Image (cartoon, rainbow, N blue to C red; front, side, top):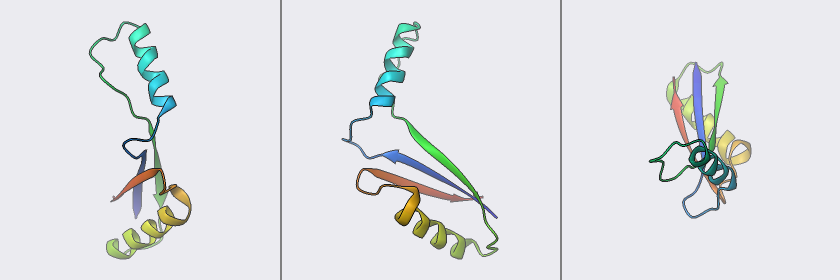
Length: 79
C-alpha cells in the first residue's frame, strides 16, 4: 500500500520560496500568477494492508516527524 503526504505552510506563514518562484515567473513573463505557495510531497510505501490503519499510522508519522505542525498543515492520501 502506498500513501502520499502533502505538507504545506499554513496560511499566514511567510513562504519565501513561494515568493521567489512567484518573482521568477514574473521575470520570465508568465503573467496572471497571483500567488505561489510551495510545499512538499512525501510518498511512502507501506507494509500495512488495512487502509484505515495505514492512514492512522501515517498521521502519527506526520505529527511526529514529517510535518512541523506549528507552521505546516498536511493531508494524507492512501493510494
